[in-house]
Each structure stands twice: as C-alpha cells, then as structure tokens.
Length: 304
Image (cartoon, rainbow, N blue to C red):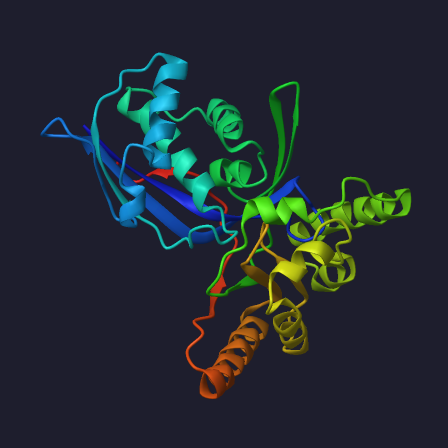
C-alpha cells in the first residue's frame, strides 16, 4: 500500500496574532509513502542531512503509530517540498502533519483531524502552524490542559501574500530569546484589539482595516532586529502598495499582504529591482520574492 499526502505551507502570527494565529498558504509540499521493499528506511527529496532515522516525517510517523497502536514498518518516503527549511513558513509543521497522517492512512484509517491536531501540537510544542496545516484557512488556536481549541475562518480570495525569503535563517531559539518576558498592560490592550480586528479583516478582505491593525508590539519590534533586510523591505513593500508587512513566524521570511494581484505584482517587482541593484553593487544575494494565495484546505490525501 502507498499513500501521497499534501500539506500547505503556513505562516504563524500574521503580525498581531502572536502564538495564536496562523494561516495556510498555497505553497504545498507532497509526501509519498510506501512500504520499503528491501527492509531499509529510504528517504529522498530532502537534503542529505535529513535522510536518516531522525527525519521529522519518519519520527512523527513512528510516534503516531506508537501513540495509537497502529502497525508500523520501514518505509520509502519521497518528499517534494518547495517550503523553505527553517524559514518561517511551517516546514517542520508540514513534516509532522504528513507523518501523522501517513500513520493513520497506512494503518487503514481515515485522517482524524482532531486527533492529528492534538498529537501534532504535542510534538511541535504549539499549534499556530500546526492548526492551519491540518485545517487550512486562518486559524485561531490555544492549548489548555493539553487540549487544543481551534476556531477556523476562511480568508478572502482576493488577498495576496508576497513571501520575501532572504538567504539566511533566524534560529527559533534566538527569536524567542529576544522577546521580553513581560509587557505593560497598555501593550496587551493594544495587541488584543488589533488581533481581533485582523481576524475580521482577513476574512472580509478589508485592506484598509488590515493596514490599520497590522502594527504588532509584542514580538516584531524585537525580531526585526534579527533580520538585516527587514526595514528596507518593509518600507519598499508598503510604498509599492502592500496593505501590511509582517514577519512570517519567527522569520527570516517576511510577508507583504496585498489587496489583489496588481499590488502584489508591484511589490514583487520592487523587491526584484532592489535585489538587482544590490547584486550589481555587491554580488549575488539570493533574496526570493514570490506570490502566494490563501489556501482553504489543510492536509489531504492525493492518491485516491
């Protein structure tokens, strides 16, 4: 038996939703699983350093089999993922969700999204990327006494997201380390109102409201200092017509949220022009800017 599973990229926080909002985007990874024909574990399609027994897809599959008493066996796993590694677009969540879904399907079961969400969150440590990877759309989530609560929203079809991916990483440990352990009440109030407004704005496609509420005070002022190009790309993207500019997860990827294709194209052209100038002045840099759409579906089986 073999199965192929597709999982979307995800962006956590969406600016003002620190550790509670996440959105699925149409940059999708596919994972093909089949029984190994020679009694060995085979993993292909990813960098060599991830092809061993500590591969996150494989360990998540094994964890699910043990947790739910499902049969397990050595596999051939082929990964086809355009999601940047350690870039803030949910590559690890996609791997975890794919492995857990594969355990269920290869074990003769359907994908149980609630159970997948709970187990995947326990492995990842937080649900902000996991929830949209499983459910699609925009998801608000929190964990209480080990139980994951989610509220899912559709995102307006007209919205566009330009991913700007620099050629360097921000380690999650560094992104957490720079955050304050406490914030003033005034900051909490500021953040709460704008987080609620952002959910409605993304659902309604209200670009004006997105622009008004996308001003984070909990994490982006601190994490921006870890991304050397942040200020330049933010200023350029907003000047080119983006409604908002946010750090995707802990970075280093950044997202320009745009009201339609024309504004998104303007942002991409602007970033590309900036890169052409930078490369001419100092050599190759490798910043990538590309268009993404909201993705309404989470993890799905493709081979039926």
